[in-house]
Image (cartoon, rainbow, N blue to C red; front, side):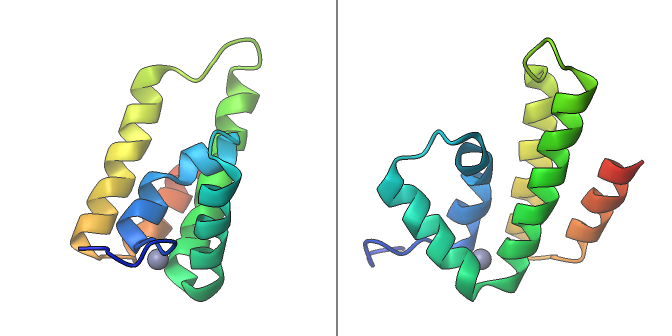
Length: 99
Ligand SMILES: [Zn+2]
């Protein structure tokens, strides 16, 4: 599926985006993700959406970690977007995050 070590596909990029934004990735993995973002517009847009979501979560829960259910919901949505290849849905996520 993905034999080219050092390169990640869109589904992995999206799946690991939260890890990346949380700084939980190894430096090498973060490099690979950054590399993918440079060459993949939709994933770069997703990165921006995720960053907005993350900021929203932190703002609404300054004293606590994000509720696991919220994180699961977000990840589920992102995974669904990725599986469908329907990148227009990213715009819907953005609307929700702004709501
Ligand atoms: Zn991509």
